[in-house]
Image 1: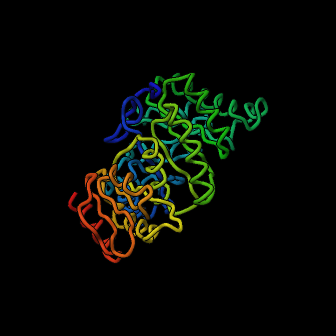
Image 2 (image 1 turned 30 degrees about the horizontal axis):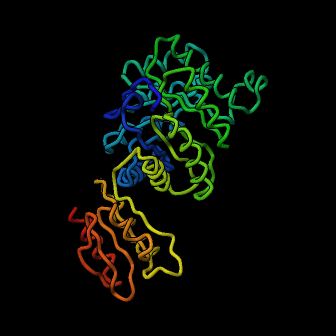
Image 3 (image 1 turned 90 degrees about the vertical axis):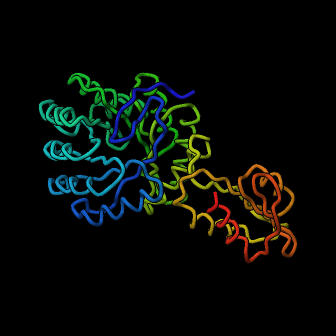
Length: 347
């Protein structure tokens, strides 16, 4: 059962309620460089990114958001810290603001940001990180889940006092148990939609594992409305991992999903090479298509019968091609990738 949360509009999409769980990422370019930023966003769009966040550390970068927004197809989020003037300017052009009310400054400055969000009818994400709790909260709790929850509740109450409720909340930590505990606790206390993430998760392999476990636990419990995988790697990898997390839990069905064996001495075909080629050449496909690539007849026939299209490796050129659960022919090894791509294209 999915946790019941408020529904917040972000551009053409929604976060929370019964809306699909979306995959987000963040650009690494200088936001003031419009061409480079737009180019990176287009690349992420092709990979399946549904909401994009950009840092706006200066007024120049905030002004650049106007042109960036004109040239992309997905909702744009401005990430602003410390300077309320930048947030007010960015609000004119984006679909959501990401701030920490506590580091914006006085209540008067926070009100100006909230007024700008109201004027342009955009939501605010309150982003709390374990590494930067307020001084009094840190003295009370240290680096704990309790500190994150109290900080998030404090920030949310500031917005509620200003009659603002179009709020999304994140409580990110670099260690999984603390992150999970924080989200679980906050989820019980409010109905605000939750943006899941393990922050500073590291490079591709450890980061993928941390994000998959942390988000997987929460999503399997019905907690979470949008996700951002954090990796010290190509941002495209963040999107790919995010989509796979949702697919593995049955929360997403779009795109080509490949079932493949890990290979062993029984494998009659080069499963790894075939899978890599199919993945790279089908990553832009949005329609849900299930492909099975299996090395031998032990588990191959069963997996291929469940797939839309599949191949079971056999001796010599007796590799069996399955479609819709039935054998439709034999394929020589050198034609496997070409044949699978052709069949996927027909679908």
